[in-house]
Length: 135
Image (cartoon, rainbow, N blue to C red; front, side):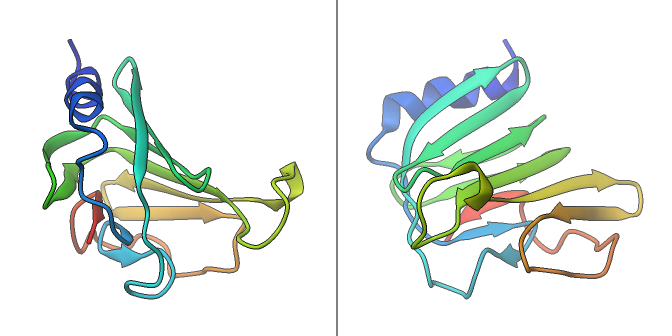
């Protein structure tokens, strides 16, 4: 059984009593700090990929997750090779053209980011925190 499968099973058993909060990916806030509250509603695994669904239609996909802690007080996955966050532009219809994404891939030089959102940052930033966490 992969880590993703173990985590999906544990999360599914603990829902809806898993920490809600604002998303950070490798230490970078999604939006402004504490601006959004995200609630996990489902967790599934495909091989070693963990896929989390959220209450506002968002999806967090974490490849090769490891060293996780989640309960009513903490949601944190410390290790991953890739973290992909998708959401529909808030306040707009859920149409394909409004689907936004942040795609972080960890490499030897740090994490790189591909996105279709206005968010930009220099390439190859060293991780400044866990792969994914709700704070």
